[in-house]
Structures are given as structure tokens and as C-alpha cells.
Length: 362
Image 1 (spheres, rainbow, N blue to C red):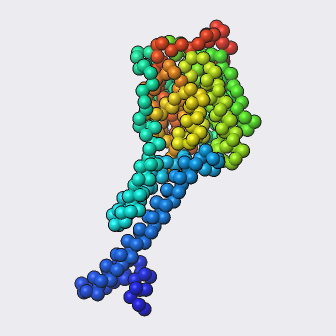
Image 2: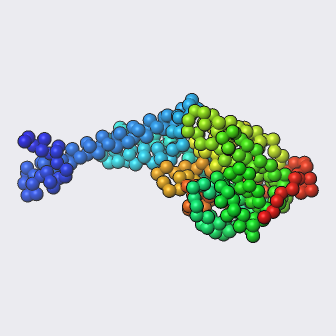
Image 3: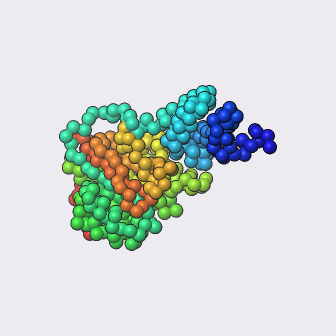
């Protein structure tokens, strides 16, 4: 068998070449090393090409629903391209390696949304703070205790729970010792330390997507809370439905007087071209901006981590703390957000405990 063929079919240097320190063995080892470098280079080039293609498709997400799906994985593309580029440089492939590093930087640029936020108006000063919690409990999750213990320890002022089944509803009502004011509409369950003023539920679509709107007294005036869960965008019709639901939430936030806080599993990431349009239409800002990257889903598969659970805040609210909670058995990590209400924020007319519809207390 020719030497080149014998080397190609081998699996390692020691198996292919003699171990004696002869010239032939050294020659053989050099050939095998070169062959392994070529194979590694081809594999890394393929990884870089696929990541570059996926990132390019994601940039065209405004053209079709399936292209938007590629936009949600910018961190994964950036990491793959950076590692691939560095390895290709080590393998003495500077052209492809440098190109990969440039593309890694391009894909990392959207991540700056989470690490730099331009200042928005005057600082919050010493206005009262409100701590909000958002948790998608996952309807298949039958273990209630981890979430209940976490919520009691987190001590939020207001909480929004999603994918709440009747069984989960009964479990969440046991939080009445710390969150006595509660309401359950569809799959959305809300709870608060203070009365839920003017509470009403709004179906967002015929598929069951729901929003619950209410006000809570934050000390310097009422804050409007919108809790919502939109459809996931898998398929042209469902993606279009999700976009309509987001538009309805944006109009709702824009029309609500005073400071507004939208908490929801919106099934969208900040990397989607739909997201900045949502913020502009709603007149809200992403609470996560400048707070670091906090992926929330899927909790049990880190390679696909993304943030699809969101807190969006209107004028008059300043984020002071933003974090994800621990694993509680759901496919989502909870979100914890502390906001400070600017003393000058005007909650708008007509929102008082005496004039609002009554809410029930558990």
C-alpha cells in the first residue's frame, strides 16, 4: 500500500508511524500532522461558513418569519465565529481566520444592547421602588414547591405568572400570605402586595394569548402593569398572529396613562427586527438594556440560550436591578426587576382605589 494511502486511513500518529526515532518515522509524523491540520481546517471553515450564513439570514429577518428565527442566536454565532477564527489563525489560515473574527465582531454588536444603554432623561432620585417578578411556570411542570419557595424568598411587590393551569392556580393562591391580592385570567395569574386597581383581562388572539392590565399604588402614584404571553412564531400564520399581539400590546401601553410596566413572555429576542419596532410603537424601553445579558429560555439547554421573557418600562420608571432567578422546574428562568418611580412621574387621571373596579383578595 502506498505510504500516502496508509497515512490517510490511519487514526493517529502513533498508530500510523513507527515509534523508533528514524528519519522515516519523523517524515511520517510530519505528514500525518499536516493531514490532521488540513482536516481540522476544513471542519472549522465549514463551521465558520455555516455561522456566517446563519447570521446573514438573520439580518434579513424582516422579509419572512423563518428568516427571523435565525436572528435570535447572535451570541451563538459570535462565539462560534470567534472560536473558529482563533483556531484557524493557529492553523496558519490567516485569511479565513481574520474574516471569521470580523464576522464575530459584527454578530457581537447587537449584544451591546445589553451592555450599554444611553441615558434616558433625569435620574430617578429618591422615588419609591417597586420589585416585579415574571415567571413562566411551564404547564407541564408539576413541581410547585421550588417556584413557591423562590417567590417567597424573592419578596416581590408584584408578580406575573404565565402558562398557569388550574392546578398551578391553586398552588399560587397559597402565596396569599405575601401577595394577598390575586387574579387569574386564562393562563395569566397576577399577584400583588397592594390592591389590583382597575384590573381587566384582554384576549390578544383567538389562540388563547392573553393580557392582564391593572394598576398598583407605588407610593408616589399608580403604576400600570401589563402581564402578557404571546404566541411563538413557528409558521407564517402563527408568526403573523404574534406580531399582531405585540402590536396590540404596544397600543395598549401607549394608551395607558402614567408609568407603564410590561412583563411578558413575548416569544421574541432583542435581536429580532420586530423588537425595536415594538419599543418604538409602545413608547417603552427594554429594562435589560445596559444590565448584562440574561437569557431566560430554554433553561435546560444552554447552547440555545436566549432572552424571550421581557420587562419593558415606560417614562417615569428607572431600572435599578435586573436579574434572572434560579431554575425552578420550568423551561424558563424567572425575571426579577427592581424599578424606581421618579417622584415627578404623573400616573394620569382617574386611577384611584375608590374609582377602580374591585379586585378580589385571597
